[in-house]
Image (cartoon, rainbow, N blue to C red; front, side, top):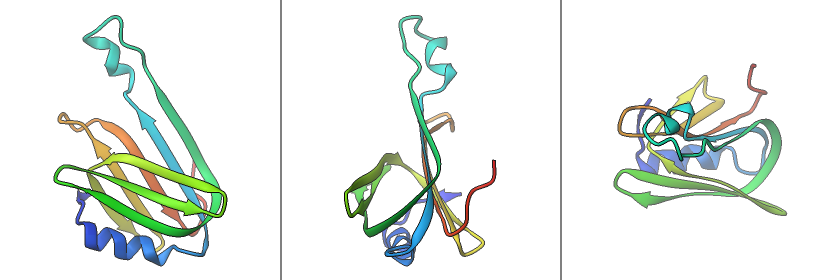
Length: 117
């Protein structure tokens, strides 16, 4: 993966607009959250292969972390804290946010075909 460049990410997001695509969204502070604080709660969300069509995609932010929003007819999907991205096979876009130690905190992936398990 490489660091997010807003213009390049926006260009790729636009390629998926108005198409039926599969989305993977994941957030986590991971099991490592409680290693340093016994009062910390582990939190996370995981959605894989949700088939959606979004009509607008937008990346915003500056510096170290970005937010990507996907506007659908009846709602939004967004991920905040994204730092890195890559295109795979011309049909899969992977974006992720990592903490200072390289651990995954958030992921947003878009694909024209279902993701494998």
